[in-house]
Each structure stands twice: as structure tokens, then as C-alpha cells.
Amino acid sequence: MYLVKTPKFIQRMFPGFTWRIPTDEKLLFLTFDDGPIPEVTPWVLEQLKKYDAKATFFCVGDNVRKYPGIFRQVIRGGHTVGNHTFNHLNGWNSENGSYFGNISDCSDVVESNLFRPPYGRISRSQAQELQKDYRIVMWDILSGDFDPKISAEQCYQNVIQNISPGSLIVFHDSLKAKEKLKIVLPKVLEYCHEQGFRFESLRNLKAQKAVRSSLAEKV
Image (cartoon, rainbow, N blue to C red; front, side, top):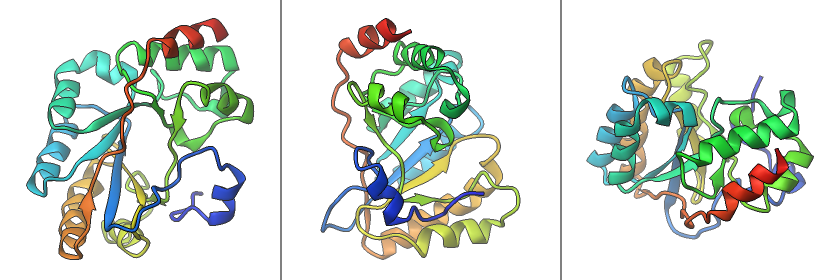
């Protein structure tokens, strides 16, 4: 069970998280979780390039370790990267020390002060510590590309029916999402371009070395 559009009351409950980007311009913010992987990420980069679209990739550290060349392609494409833990850990099921250690391991290969918790699941105590070093980025719209129970058309409608200036949209450059993503992403890019929207990445304020050292102290 998941919510396609994050209700405003939930956003108000966690005001320290980034749910959308306040703007009066026709800007949208695409994000891709769980990569990079050779089967999907290079294709995503090709689609984005067609529309001069920039995006933010929340990377799993172990995938960056395995596919450093693809990670470099993301960077060279002018996109932003963020930390998505080293092993895609669920914060609700993780002891704080091991969770912080896993994020620190990811920070060794992904230099960023942006963090997105896998599954959007993070405890209050984890969030309080991480916000000292990271900007925790959630989302306004969850496309559902990972969901085998919905069609590609429903995934497409999930996005285009809910966008507004500043929307933060989640897709996945993963094997689970591959089939729907290859249908939906080109259509979303084309539709939004025709509606006059531009796609920007999140500003990646350069992470300081203190991020790694302060997290290590919590392990």
C-alpha cells in the first residue's frame, strides 16, 4: 500500500523533510532511486538527454561500487546524485548504529549531502541525527513504476494527473521498474515538455568530509 500523491498533512508532520520545491516557475524535479545498473540507467540518461532534462539519482552504494563507470555517466550528464544507503536498508527494521554505518559506507562512494531513505521509511531518531548532515529528500508524487499490480498507463496517469510546479517525482532505475519505466518515462518527458515544463535536478550543495566522520562517530 502506498500513496501516489503525498498528502499535505503528512508533509506538515515532517516539515524538516523536502517534499517538493517551492517555485512559481514551470519546473519539475525527476528523481530515480536504486541504481545505477547497466540494464536501465544508461537508457534513462539517453531519454533525459533528448529533452535536456536534468534529474537527481539516489544511488545505492553497492551498485556504485559494482558499476562505477555508469555512475560516472550520471555525473558527466550534469545530473545530481544522492545517498540511498549502501544496501537499500529499511530504516524501520534497522538498528540506528548499523543504519548510520550503512549510510556512511555509501558516502564513501557517493559524495552528496542529499539523502533519501529506502521505502521512505526512517525513524524520528534516525532523521534527527541525519538532518545534522543531510537534506532528507522525500517526494510529492510516487509513480508506482515498481508496482506489478498496475499498468504502464496507470503509472503514467499517476504522474501527469498530479504534477504541479515544484513537484518532486519518483521513478526507479531498477530491474523491477524496467518494463514500465521504458514505456512511461518517454511519455512523461514528452507530455511535460509540451506543457511547457522544464526538468531540473536538486541543488547538490557539496557534501563536506564532516558528513562521513560525524556519521562514523554514531556507529
